[in-house]
Image 1 (tube, rainbow, N blue to C red):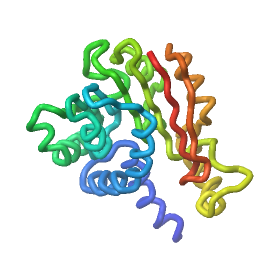
Image 2 (image 1 turned 45 degrees about the horizontal axis):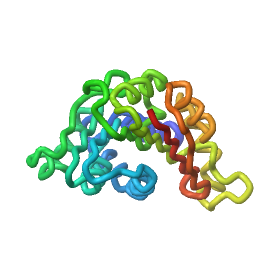
Image 3 (image 1 turned 180 degrees about the horizontal axis):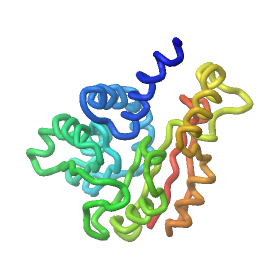
Image 4 (image 1 turned 90 degrees about the vertical axis):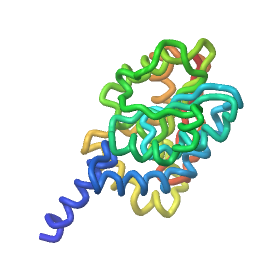
Length: 227
């Protein structure tokens, strides 16, 4: 009985991780923005973004990555794309000043059909969204298309097979296996760094590599590649 009562709220939360919608979605969006800030900062540290570059964040959610990236590119431009209109609105509010100055824009769209021309960006990032791409290889092909020659892609996951198996953190010890197994039953493909870089190579990226923090959350990993 208790399990049945708890199932619906959990389903609401999980659905809104994938595509935030309505009041619950807006709340989940704010929570994800706070929860993923440290992961976002860690990702940006590995992206080697320069002051005048153009950056696209795919699955921008509430716009925290867009905001932090725009602070790194005071002479550049940052775009965000999300397929939840509620998240687009939230990201627009969070970045209102930079949008007014023409340094940021946020559009409705998805990974499989990015609303930008070829070779328009120096970097493409996707932070904690790759699980939800309906066609990951098509999304990577789109990232490759919109990057300039020599441009960089960064795909970051908070939950991966890089989690510390030999010396798990307290969170991993108590929640790791249960959470990842439940996520995979619900259709999320939990990847290793090697699997991610293999997908980048298959999509045409070169110099692929990954960095990981196995004891952070459920195994942080960031895969990087160049066009």
